[in-house]
Structures are given as structure tokens and as C-alpha cells.
Image (cartoon, rainbow, N blue to C red; front, side, top):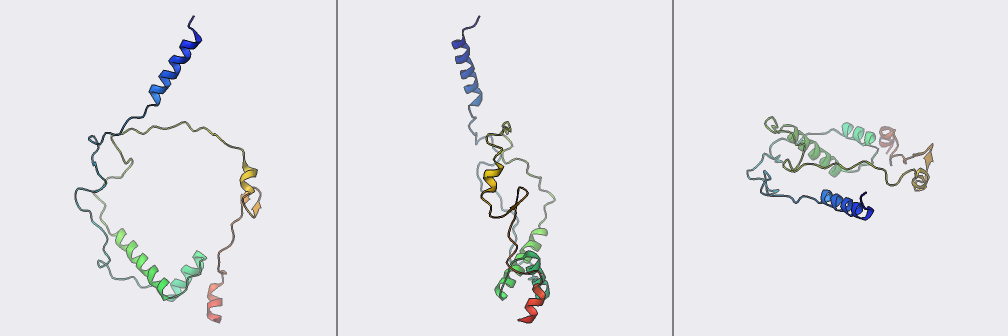
Length: 154
């Protein structure tokens, strides 16, 4: 019969060897640096003309997003954002392979999905000011839905 002390020491040593993390070998990596070796295509601001957004479209975006946006500067910012999105959609990605893992040479280790803390619904819901049937109730947006009527009155 095996002594319990010996068996325990053996199990502890074996588990310690299994848990030891492998150090990252930078020589095996495809790219040893985050800086690419060759330049990549980027979206420059001068490539495309600005995308005009009418005030009616801007009011619709404001109403749908439930965010009160004031001023011409905000409209110019939205126009620049749409212009940048147009540039990104025009970038040729036909020869680029999808990225599944950042480090292809290193295997990914999955951990067991074990619940360490749980069944604390009541404690979590105490943080909310308004709840309904075990759900958080979020506050409404900061502008009314009938934005178009209120903007015409002003």
C-alpha cells in the first residue's frame, strides 16, 4: 500500500509541473514586434470628399440616438465620422487572411468554466435605483422622442 504522504507529495509535484507556464519564444513568432515590417494602406482625410448631412437627417440621427446634440460643430464631427467610415469600407481587404489568434505559434489554453461566486442576484440588484422582475431599468434618453416638433417651436 502506498503511503498517503508520498502520494500527496507526488500529486502536488505533478500538478505544479502541469501548471508551469511556457515562456513566449519571440524567435518562433512571425513578427517579433508590434511595428509592421512594411507600410500598410491607411485612410487619409484627403482621399474622399466630405459627405454632406442635411439638417433633417441630422435631426433624425439626434432623435434616434436619444442624445441632444447642439451646434454646427457637432454636425461637422458627424460628417467627418461618416467620411472616415466611407474610407474604411473602400480599403481593399481581399488578400488579407482573417485573424483568429494573435500568436499562432503559441497554443491557447482554456480554463474550466467554474462558477466561483454565484446566486447573488439580490445583492447585485440592490445597486440599481429602479428594477422590475429582476431586471435593471435604465433611464430614458435626455431628449423627448418628438424632437422635430419641439425644434420647430423654438
